[in-house]
Image (cartoon, rainbow, N blue to C red; front, side, top):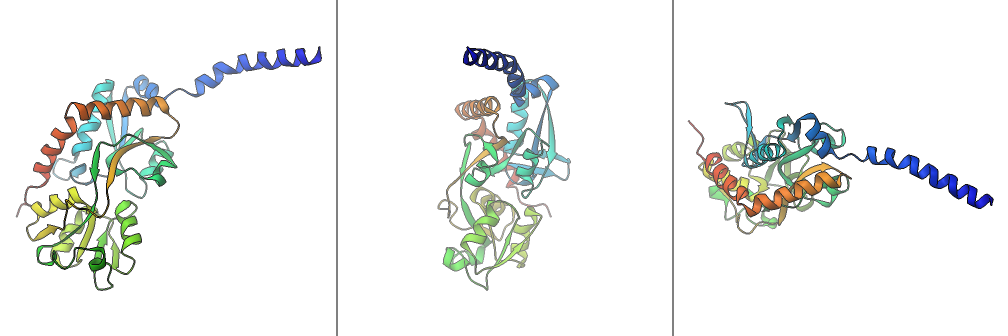
Length: 268
């Protein structure tokens, strides 16, 4: 009899607590729709994916177009918040934005802290060097020398690659990622390690620079978007968005558009 009474009490409590648990599991997707805006974090320093244009003071690029389209599909406004590579994941954990975009590599280490969407773009690391140095600064063995000066931006997969693969090189961390190609051209650095798509942009934008073997990068990596871990509804919506955007050719069109615009030679 006592066991039956205890079981009845337990089942009764479980029934009472069930609605409370459901309320706590409200998705960020519902929150975004309810409040009427989507907040996106981005670094603004990685062409052609995210770039804070100093002339317009607005963000632009492949992933900015995607963010605008995501907001439009949701029927909400888009709010963009600037962030940095070292604080990119931190911004998700601290609830500063709903989504992080901008050529973000899908890594296992990031996946331990946040969710990452399905990939929408494949890339890989390659050297950006002066045109005259392509033949002698091409392989890992060429680059992993104390005499080779490497400029790299902090906190992302570029720096991780350099630390792991080029431990003997003379490495300098530069906060402003967009300034590194110019420093290579000016002779301050010998090489910049970045993703092949960015290297090819600066090869066209700054005559005298060259992307070394961009079609055969050192690594093969995918880009995705970051969001809070545990929110399956938001993740599923974003994965479906990425899938459909690829099917409809959106990413292809945005890539063609921004590769052309961001590859124009620097104005005198």
